[in-house]
Length: 274
Ligand SMILES: NC(=O)c1ccc[n+]([C@@H]2O[C@H](COP(=O)([O-])OP(=O)(O)OC[C@H]3O[C@@H](n4cnc5c(N)ncnc54)[C@H](OP(=O)(O)O)[C@@H]3O)[C@@H](O)[C@H]2O)c1
Image (cartoon, rainbow, N blue to C red):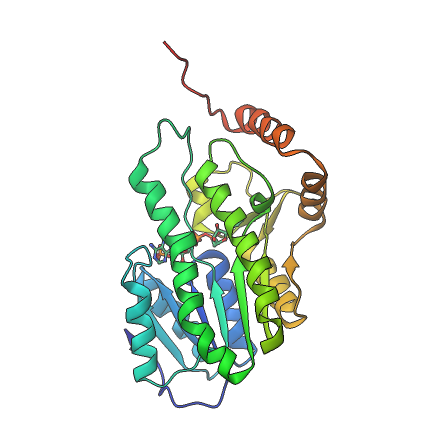
């Protein structure tokens, strides 16, 4: 854990998980441009250090925390270290994510457990530890990074899509609990986003098309939505159309439709019985 400048500062502070690449990296740069001090978290310390150097041009303080958020003790350790440094979090960005692709009957439970630790448990833990101070100060912003898959059960990404649906429901619920304290909860639901390692691992052949959007543009739209206190931010017309279509279809039809699309475009097949 290292700081690139003294932590005593009057600027608001944004904590961003998964800041070492992709959407988190772009969001961190955006917040730095807007004059926020940063707490950036991910496992890849070298990438976080490179980001901190980039952000220095905006004369903000950046605290790097290299941590694996799938470890149950990680959040408490982060919280304690921030308490010791008297750093107050004004904006919490739960962005860190990972994918698990394949038929559920074939994927490794260890990977799915990690995904749940990262995209559900760590989000709950981080929200739990930073809310009391936000409530006390009667101000705060939370940005949870979901996906257009928050609205769809997705065969061959079953646990991933279910975790994104959790984020949406969880955020919708606590937003209403927190209204009276002046705390906003925004869910970002991107579609296919380029300039990310997530897409590299999925090996999307076509990086640039009308279906995709670069991480920097997604981050810009997310930042504006957060400032406008929007409940849901869906970047791009295609993604908005997709989500609205999903809203009107019964879930059973949705899942079988997405199953067909995924099977055709991704080549996944359910193993034959017998
Ligand atoms: N790319 C897309 O098409 C897309 C679409 C919809 C939603 N999203 C969502 O957007 C968010 C950001 O993903 P991205 O697309 O920007 O992909 P990415 O480039 O792979 O970024 C994922 C970030 O999460 C961090 N991370 C992963 N495992 C971690 C762990 N165990 N502990 C701490 N940090 C961890 C990674 O850092 P380290 O590896 O250094 O730990 C990295 O900084 C995710 O929640 C993803 O589900 C992405």
